[in-house]
Structures are given as C-alpha cells and as structure tokens.
Length: 99
Image: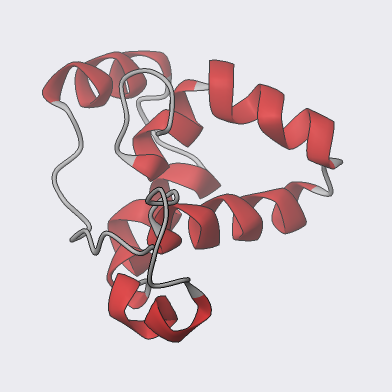
C-alpha cells in the first residue's frame, strides 16, 4: 500500500549537523537541494499494492537508488550508508532510521 508523502522538510537537527560536518555540501546534499522535487510519490502509485502495510516512501527509495548508483555501492553498503551517513540522512530528510 502506498502512503503518499510529500518531499517534506529536512529535520532542523539533520540540517545543522550535516552543514557543520560538510559546510560545502556534497553530491547527496546537492541531489536533495536541487533535484529533490523530481521525485514524487504519485509517480510511483501504480507500482504499489492497494492493501497491506505501507511501504517506504517511493521518493526516498528513488533518492537512495540514485545515490547507490552514483557511488557504485552494493546493497549492503547502501543499507549501511542509509543508517550512518549524515549526507544520506539529509538527502532522505530523516534524523534516524528510514521507515
């Protein structure tokens, strides 16, 4: 089931910490700031079941997939990046785990 989400604001604490650690930003942060609007959940609606537990927002999956490709990461490395990297948390507008 698709629970449509808007891109939403990046949590203030995530912005503060990411900007302190990476004052000039990087590709992940640029992706969110400049291209974030390209990813809209409604574009993926027909790919989701109509019943069951809601999945992860399609726009977040799209951002993670683009970053994975850009950095040439394996699925395991990508999962680690989503968990621990500030720039990826910034790009995905999260402060903790992606749900």
